[in-house]
Length: 456
View 1 (tube, helix red, strand yellow):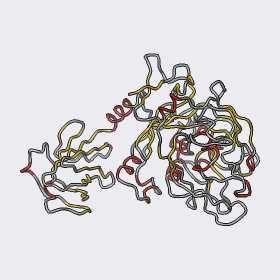
View 2 (cartoon, helix red, strand yellow):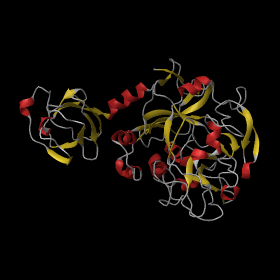
View 3 (cartoon, helix red, strand yellow):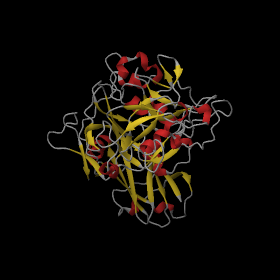
View 4 (cartoon, one colour):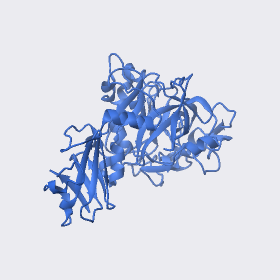
């Protein structure tokens, strides 16, 4: 049974049963005893007679009698589910975001002052994802927990050089913190390798799409390089800290690569693997929804989480693959998203952060305030996880250009960078929630005094 309640009776405590009033039901099925649901409202630790009208709160609900509940932020009302007994009692707790920010960040070991949106400073910024902006994700049949997880406020590092360095995989200040970001499983600390690694192919599937490869992450060469359980050329070399041959061009061509312990880019050690969470990564594409040259940061975020795939073509020389297309992938090591890059700018004096986020990422090439103040920009070009769907081909993915914009196009040659084209990449992971950032009184998160990671 599901009940969304409006005009509800509110209680300072469950004992105030005689004050019960009627309530209006917006939707759902209600048993005869539905008016016996009691709600106790608490705001920032104090009992309330009414629901707070200020919607800048995080709301949690707990019930007895095995009932459950969550807050409907759109209707600004509680949703009570799985109730089947009279006199069911639920606590509804409202916590102001300022207090909640400190609590959430402290839980993950992030000791950082949140920057004002257009301060232009390097540091930690809040990113909100209201339902009306998540256009495609909410057309999917998600359960209440997944929806709640997608709507949580994120905390992301942005600017030219924020203090977000961390020692991970025994690499001193070798990784950086993207932030505390949303996944279908909940919020996680997301890390990315500081160094843009040598250029390899995103995919090098022989025979498919005129030997140009396939833009499906779940079967790609680079996914197999980074994750466990794959054999043969390129397979699991980074994950297993091994040497071998990595794909770097058309039709399965390879080049020697070295991810051994003493190399410049060591693969994952056993301690690091223990810290990495197995997460559902969203690998949606742009589909027919938006031309790749007309996508802003928030739109990329939504499309990454959509049901669109990287293949909308059905015929043609570059559309012959029979690979099953996915929109989610369960794994440990991925790459950054285009939206990760977009949200990492602080903006500058002439074009502030809001203006950068409101600008199509392809057009950042002419906005140095946006890309020069984005710590994820690097040289050479960098691959992302997101495929680019074209009506004539299934061989492109989005890249972060060394010129500061997002596209599938080589800016200098004005040709598409297909998945077989060698490009840089940066392994990206989510930490398990049993771990947090740590440091002593000298820890600042700078490159010389990075965070470390410890068990909670």
